Image (tube, rainbow, N blue to C red; front, side):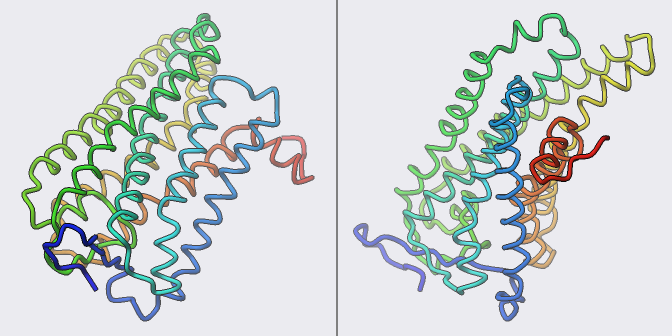
Length: 315
């Protein structure tokens, strides 16, 4: 099954793994995963349709939200084919080239999500700390450039990883730890000297997820400082309320990232299924929950969704 050759003309084949110890129940377990993907797709498409069809929502915050929804769609669709192939059809083999393409998109959309959350934090900072300059600073052109910068940054830092992997040899049974391809997971199977790729991957994580989280935290420190300077308690709560949705999606994204890192570093004694489920949660939770958060917490979006469903009522 796994390729075990030194012939450079023969492409390696990797073996995908589902949920360790639960292989007999994969067909049943595919149902909740299908439901999660369906919720992610429906929720994000709904958010996009509401924002794109309602002229009153053509504002910087909602433009960034639409980019976040597109990112979540891309992230969920990146893992969907192999996840369902393994759990539902028991198709476990994947060509190395397809694996590299998948890991490129998974990591690109992951870093893109982090970048968009940072851009949204900047949006909230300007809205609360520089309200009089908000429309002048965050024009449609600026939002477009921010979105393009986020995409180019995410693709640029990830692109070297599959290019480096193409030059490595895999000389043993190449069984991956998940139902999809991740950079570090593939790297562990290499029998070549992969130190450059490993160090590069670590540097990319620090320069993207690490730095983004620091700047997001800094923005909220400045926001909190500005809010505490407002005399009226009611105005303080009103200002903070505009940040609640963003804070929730930041936690939904970064808490699983931290959890995966902790389990990977300190949980080597844990069952393999724990590592697998943590990775699944890390990749599936944001696309599923982000639309729910913004649908519940954002009145303008909630009202328009209810209106589309014929359920609008006075709130």
